[in-house]
Length: 319
Image (cartoon, rainbow, N blue to C red; front, side, top):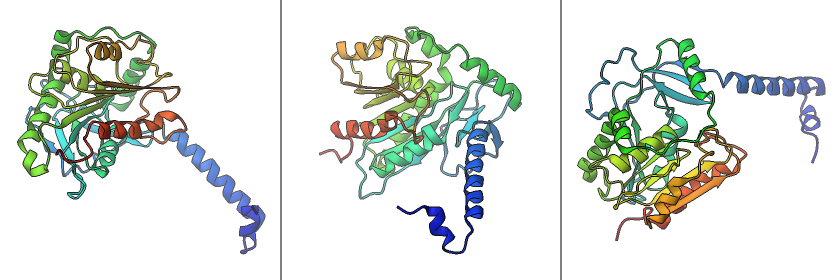
């Protein structure tokens, strides 16, 4: 193959100028990658399809919802009013199954692109109706510098073994979020005919804190009864499995600093209870890989999840 510099120089560009342009492009890309890690405040994006869930404003909230960009994704924080955004498939490929998508962010932020809207769009392309849950969050400082300091403290000392979750504690600590997820299930079932969704085939997928919410919704939710659930790099501590526990899909990277240091008791609990469970433990991927394109096999989690949904009959209309 010919040197592209030589090929382009034959079109009238000097080699020196082309090499300078190439070096400038590389420098710009490197600078962008570095600046991409910085939390940058942005205007709240238009969310015209978002539906308020009616769970009310977060009690005693002082800071109001704001947005920032980081890692090429948009994040919401200080969410005080919960919403649900539908991503509906084309009618000719709709299977009737639906998924509530719960982004993560330590209950302080929500990774709306990487773990929310991008996931929902990918599911809708495969015929699954997807609904992104923007649940209410714990309050954080309105000032960006103070917020960054708080997040740095949260991420320090992450290599620890997560404790076994206590249902009563989950119900109390995650009360607003559980109220939001329950309202999401109720709204989808209420509008199932309009959205062409089978009310008995509504599942939930969560990422990190969203995975915690997914598990709490399953373990202590009263009327939600998800048809299937997915825990993507969430805690895997042992639990008491409900008698009506749904099929469970789990994906985690071995170098995850938060949840790769336990004994995977959640998998064991589901398996011993003779409930369907599938576990993908990737060598690399870190925490928060979501829909980001990476050079690790963790990127394949979505295809594996899609195959799992297909195996459980969620990719085609119910006979």
